[in-house]
Structure formats: C-alpha cells, structure tokens
Image 1 (cartoon, one colour):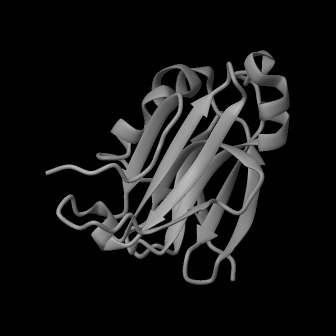
Image 2 (cartoon, rainbow, N blue to C red; image 1 turned 60 degrees about the vertical axis):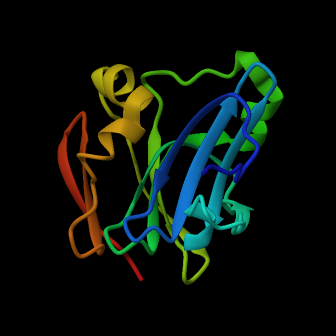
Image 3 (cartoon, one colour; image 1 turned 180 degrees about the vertical axis):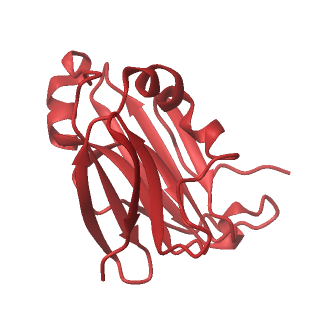
Length: 169
C-alpha cells in the first residue's frame, strides 16, 4: 500500500527521525524560486496503512539549509545553513541564486519539544565538501551523523580542523 503524504516540487531530499516520529523534507527548485524545509510529524503519517498525513509545518527560521541531521534521540535537528542568506533571498533571486564554495556556513539546532532554534558558530568548509558531500547529504546521513550519541553536542570539520560543539541551554 502507498499514500501521498505531501505534495513536492523540484529536487527533494528527506530524512526520517531515528524513532520514526517525524520526517523532514527539503524541496528546492531555484528556477521557480521554490524552497521549503517541511516537517511531517506523527508515526502514523509515515505508516502507509494509516490514512493520517500527520501534522505538517515549515521549519520556523528563514535560513537556507543545505543539509540536516536528526539527533540520536530524535528531539533535535542540526541544520547546515548559508550565513547571510535567507529563504526570501533565494526565492527572489530564483535561478540567479548561487552558493559560493567560499560561503560562510552556520549550524542551527532546532529543538522540537521546545519549538526553538539556536545558531552556532559561522565557519568555512572545504570546496571538496561542497562538491562531494552536500549534493548527497541525505545518503551520507544514513552512515555518518555529526551528533554525539547523547544528542548533547556535534562534531564537524572546517578548513581549519575538527570542531566539537556542545549545545548551549
């Protein structure tokens, strides 16, 4: 059995939380200026035998996420965003919107139970990361997750080395 949970446009990538309680779907079509980072909550929504399509909402920040990862406890989403660029910028620029391999990036952690997000340090990554990892992040996320096992910190590599970032608050 199958069912339609969400209408999508353009290129789509998604991840399901480790506890199967939600999915996050990234949709983008820069030709028409479409960008959405949508959450579908509810285990029944992901069950093809259930008629439920769950609770659906857009992530509550105006940032362009390039990649995202669920915490092991499924309560947080770590989003890699473009510093200084908003969804509104991307929608307005349409096909003229470009991400330079020298762009500053920022991690954002969204806490689902608290319905709040926090920005962390801005950094630069390597061109290799842009070319080989980002286009396939949802595939890599199945094997590599930057979260610590206790969901209280994350690790990432920048052009200056390995960074460990504990969550604040």
